[in-house]
Each structure stands twice: as C-alpha cells, then as structure tokens.
Image 1 (cartoon, one colour):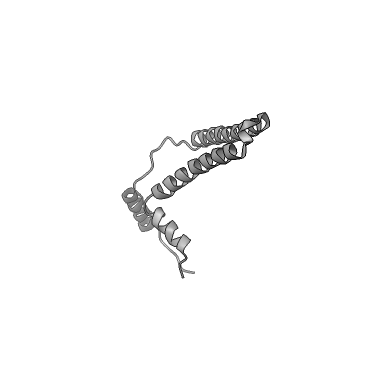
Image 2 (cartoon, rainbow, N blue to C red):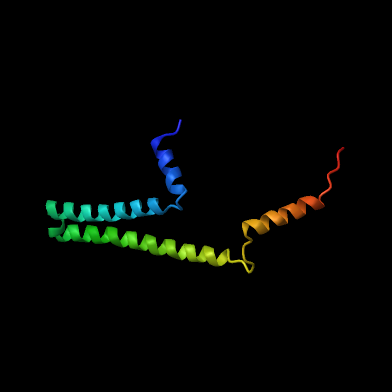
Length: 107
C-alpha cells in the first residue's frame, strides 16, 4: 500500500525534483521570515543579546554553506574525467558487443 508521502516523492522524482526544490525553497524563506517576525513580536531583536544570538546563528549557517560549496568543488575536481560520458544508446551498443565476444563454458 502506498502512503501519501511515497506517492508525493514519486511524483516529484519524475519531474526532476523541481517541485520539491521550490517547496523547500519557499519553506526555508518562510521559516526565516517567521523567525524574524517572532523575534520582533517577543522583543528578542530589541536587546543586544538577541541580536548577537541571531547573528551568531546566521554566521554558523553561512559558514556551513561555504564549507559545503568548497567540499563540492573539491569532489568535482577529483571526479573530473578526461572522457565524456557515453549516451544510453552508446552504452547499450558497447554492452552488446562485450556480451557477443564472451563464450561461456559449462563444467
């Protein structure tokens, strides 16, 4: 039996994760706006301690994003290949040629 969440995942998977990306993006900025509004309503942003706490949290988040970008660039540089990837048709033809050349021996 399929659950709602697995069906939703399959639906976004077929559309190359565009819907999931936009929902996540809107949710992220929505949470930031909600945090600022709640901080203003509670008076947390009026005190210097509140501003320091919010700026510290934002700084840690920005450092995490920078670290992730650096690691991604390093992994892309490490995985860089001098050959271009084969298309699906080329892969199928290459596999069929390899399988034709094999001779199986039975014991």
